[in-house]
Image (tube, rainbow, N blue to C red; front, top):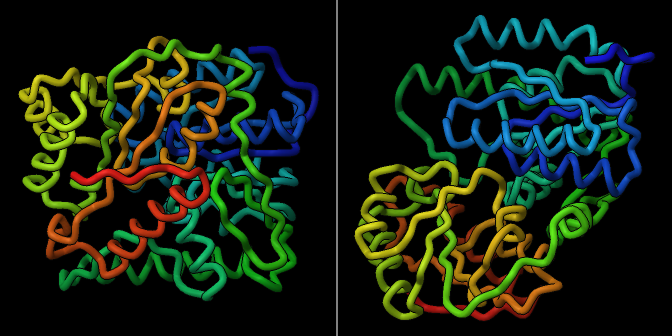
Length: 352
């Protein structure tokens, strides 16, 4: 790789394929020059996520973006090495772009950065919860997190809260940090600029897909995060397959292989995309009817597929599906994700 003439003014830190896609969208929309932006992937451990990140990194490089790869999750020493390796570059950065303010690794990096400007790009519907917590002055914690009596985990949670408080002071109201948000969601933060992600790069980069008759079902990782019971989820999938003659099931990158095998037994082709669904949906053939549970895609796909005749339907989560360990916020949060998408894009709801 050729040596650059000057240090980049902007450093982007991403941990998921969607975050990397949204950084590319942000850079394209903002007109960020290739020499002014360095993208650092803080690799997860999930194999499918890693594969999608590799593929998304290749696309970003094709656009002239410089992407590096770090392994912070191979143990405590690996995290320390990653932070040390970033320290020198962080010292000269004027703008920090991050995709997940809830991430422990990113929170550590953000707490030591002194960049005067921070941009948060979408990491899915968690952005909605970030906005709520930022306004309320709460600890930054994921909406599906649950309390645990385990002593070691309580100590770990206390340590995370300490870092979270440091991040809040870093980017909170009155901090002096120029904070902005780049999002495809309808979200507002008082006195914080919100730039809308229209997915213009995806639509320009990939041709309008061929749309065929039939139905595709979009999977979710709500079972894997402990929010939804696997038995009820599979029953719901079976009902949708029967009602709408579903041909394909687009798996979420975090879905369990055993669960996906059970879905294949329903006679459905399980598709494991190598790229975020916002890109995969524009490559190849797409069903005219897309069905999704409440998730990020009910807000992103209407934008990505605006130039196609494809129709998106939303299947709400029934009260009986939630597990005993699901957080108290789960039902209201997912209901808001669904209802806001229906109102915003005129989507229809379907019953499972």
